[in-house]
Image 1 (cartoon, rainbow, N blue to C red):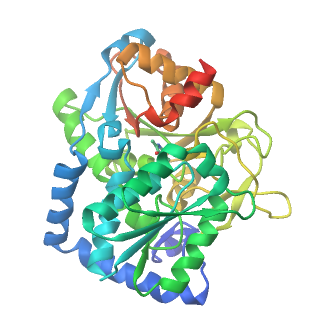
Image 2 (image 1 turned 90 degrees about the vertical axis):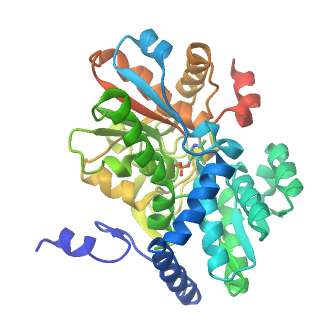
Amino acid sequence: MSYTTQIIRERGRYGPYGGRYVPETLMAPLEELERVYTEASADPRFQAELDSLLENFAGRPTPLQLASRLTEHLGGARIYLKREDLLHTGAHKINNALGQGLLALRMGKKRVIAETGAGQHGVATATVAARLGLACTVYMGTEDMERQRLNVNRMRLLGAEVVGVNAGSRTLKDAINEAMRDWVTNVRDSHYLLGSVLGAHPYPQMVRDFQKVIGAEARVQILHAERRLPDYLFACVGGGSNAIGLFYAFLNDATVKMVGVEAGGRGKSLGEHAARLGASGGYSGARPGVLQGTYTYVLQTTDGQIATTHSVSAGLDYAGVGPEHSWLSDQRRAEYTAVSDDDAIQAARTLARTEGIIPALESAHAVAELIRRAPHMEKDEVVILNLSGRGDKDMETLSRYV
Ligand SMILES: *Cc1c(COP(=O)(O)O)cnc(C)c1O
């Protein structure tokens, strides 16, 4: 048996990646979460309750729309959009927030804790907490609170307590530290509701399982529309939850190629981008390391300090990536590439004008990569692009550029 097969059999491992690197105090709550989550996954009543909320509250299933004008404009493959932007609160994040909210209730917790950068995950969490009758505290850097006033107001209207974090760079990673501190102190009655396929086991697996509905629906929908599987899947990769959500149902279909698109920011040197898996594109600074409880590719300086990152899109602006993507990248099962700020903005404009859809800037990265490649594809090839969210939240940035 090879080294890699041994390792992948271990719980929460994706090849050498993943695992659980946390202080002793968090071992027990993570064990509890894993146990309750495993029981819930095998409980048809839990799944029925989640399905009902996804349908009636969040708006699933989302359409798989043939983007006929974009297809014509690019002159290559037939392009389908998986419309996660049509969900309640405007992005795929609600799928996971609902799943974990129900788990919190099942564990008898009264409160959820979240951290948020741009505020999208905070809004999804506050929304679900209100719907399920849970108390909610969201940590946010004060710098981010300035930039995202509207989302702060949304969360407060929904009844969440928004706590400003005035330490360090006053952004996401400082907010994560505060949220962890709160969790350690209040772990008996609080659930930490993590927003992407990051963190210690079981989070990467659990969040993927709550997002895999995207690909499960898309698979049925494309077989109905085209009578065959797609040739390509495209998705943007921040932590990687919308991407793995789409990819997962197709991982065993060898003919389906997968493209994950990271933030190329404004340059290839460390600090200018968030392309953790983009070494082949010349983006510097990523190598495996431990970040926030998981072993994965991390953007870091030569002496191992977590690097600063840059992206025009807050949802992609993070130094680490989900461990399963690190493994899929090493295995070359999925390909990872990066798109610059400028190209993403341009792509948002193209999608708006050809399809009447203003995408989130995160999703616009995937659109930009597709715009680059589709003209070189055959007309009978089929692409599914995950439109992870809508662009209302990005209107200020978009209008500044246009
Ligand atoms: C948060 C966010 C992302 C990035 O998160 P993933 O976990 O990589 O999916 C992408 N798109 C939208 C619209 C988001 O809000």
